[in-house]
Image (cartoon, rainbow over all chains, first blue to last red; front, top):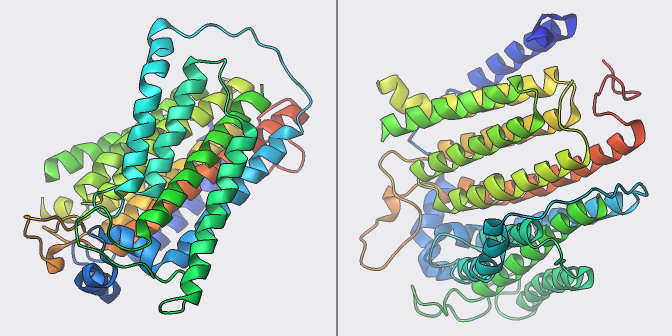
Length: 234
Length: 79
Length: 120
């Protein structure tokens, strides 16, 4: 509370009022509940026939806007690399006395780890049919590794395995895009495989492949981030 | 539906405001994960199940875990 | 009631943005500032999703045997945008926390007033 009454607090409150009025008068006039985007309705109308994916969000993320997704995956890679580089330089190591995890956590991390991995794999394999996809599945896999680090503190992710899985799946993403440049409609990341039957697992061309690659990459990346945060920064 | 949304929004804003007042950083982190949890409910009510799933996995579990590790590494109380 | 039903999501999103900015501007503890960035991030995502909402619409996912028409679905473009933004936000947050850990190693404190060059 005392922060509010200093000179700095008054300046900050003034800035907040200016920012709030500015934002609200600019975008508060957008009517709620009536989206007016022709791009969105065009994707909804034609998406099923053009891409073969039942989930339109998937066809936006890995179909129409796949190049953006490649850029975002690159940002993820740079952030994870920067984090492990920053934390690897710390020389100071405090050897804390670690308490053992409770029985519930110790048992839970053994029992639930494969199930959470399986759920994550289900999410990114079925990304073109049901809600879910590579990013969600990767995050679920990362949370499985977080559970392992909390409960079974002896186990670690192999650094080379996570690094090489991450690099290989990123390379696979670009490679699929380059194949699309060579065959089919000849643009980067074009959907060159047959579309298949709607609502079946083997449909939507390269979308399941790309989402599997993204899922492996995001999962390996988050596992590496958790490993760096817990083990390097001890 | 609108009643659930209203209650959720005010709960979310209350949790976000309590971040400002907590001196214990661990409490602040738990409050921010509550904000993510209620935002998940709002995303679901706004018919965005994909986004709700991502927010539930990342905002509630992973980000909270990373914050807790960083707090254990530095210091817990705000002076 | 009609005001609430049309603006409650905007109130939530703007409230989160304002509270996040409040925490960023007023707090001096570095980890608390990063929590404020997290709140701001969630607020922006909530705002983007609520601009794409169609009243009475369904999720943009087709399923067999369930007669959903494309004109009664919410806009999928903001959802695709926010989906990646959440993942990026989490990884950038982890990067910011690692920088905070290095600041704590170097200066022995998280108070921004005591860190050289950060006082205002």
